[in-house]
Length: 255
Ligand SMILES: *[C@@H]1O[C@H](CO)[C@@H](O)[C@H](O)[C@H]1NC(C)=O
Ligand SMILES: *[C@@H]1O[C@H](CO)[C@@H](O)[C@H](O)[C@H]1NC(C)=O
Ligand SMILES: *[C@@H]1O[C@H](CO)[C@@H](O)[C@H](O)[C@H]1NC(C)=O
Image (cartoon, rainbow, N blue to C red; front, side, top):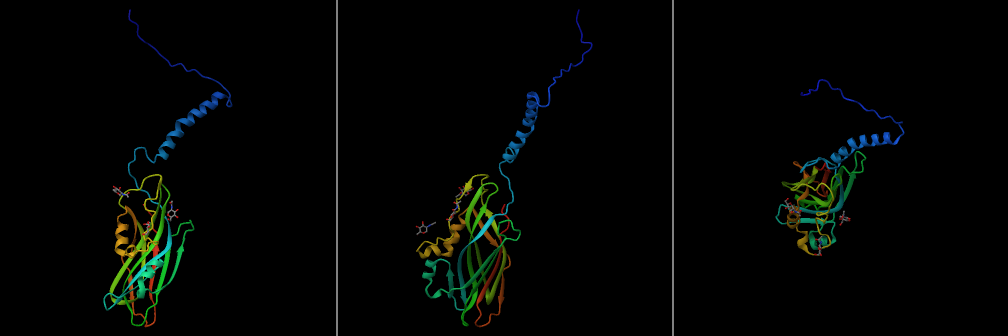
């Protein structure tokens, strides 16, 4: 005769032990291991199969106190004055060399150890007959990111501005922005671009040529650019007054 299951009930088996027993310890450990390691794995891998992501971080940016200045004079074409912090460059300038007065100040507004703003002021002494129609200015920075990969580079802010009328002052207020053609790696140390933008040890004039410096810089996959859509050109210089460049450079967040 066939048999059928007519009734069933689960049987529960209990185990008793003190809270300080090995069994209690094991149970606690097993529970902890069930929840904590998966969280750690998810956290440490920054998302399991993530291929690309973006994040924001304030870079540590320091002005390296390297300056290269070319002031274009007019109205006769071809006249210029120049100066840099590189002795070799200055030696090559001959009569065009003019030493300006430079003052800089880096400001850490929120006291987090990272500089937020660079105030740069340059006063170029001029004779009464000299008139500035344009300016090319290069400042170099050391730029570091730490949050994911440690990324260290030496970068620059290049500023060029020219107007049809002679100026007394150029006022610039812009952001130093990171520009990437390639994502940064998510860990490790990246010092590919920790090379000086301007080779100050070189004795050759071509190493100080702005065209070459900018061309070599643009070959990089990661650069910084100074973005200031509206440099302000002030006119009306008194005869003996210097030409002034007043720049405020904000070291904005990297991404
Ligand atoms: C720059 O980026 C390109 C494209 O991602 C890559 O092929 C090249 O190797 C990179 N150059 C350097 C120096 O990392
Ligand atoms: C980057 O270059 C500077 C100057 O050459 C050097 O002092 C610094 O140690 C370098 N940083 C790294 C992480 O290699
Ligand atoms: C700088 O120039 C000198 C002389 O030409 C050269 O030996 C040196 O390798 C250059 N340094 C860099 C970083 O290009």
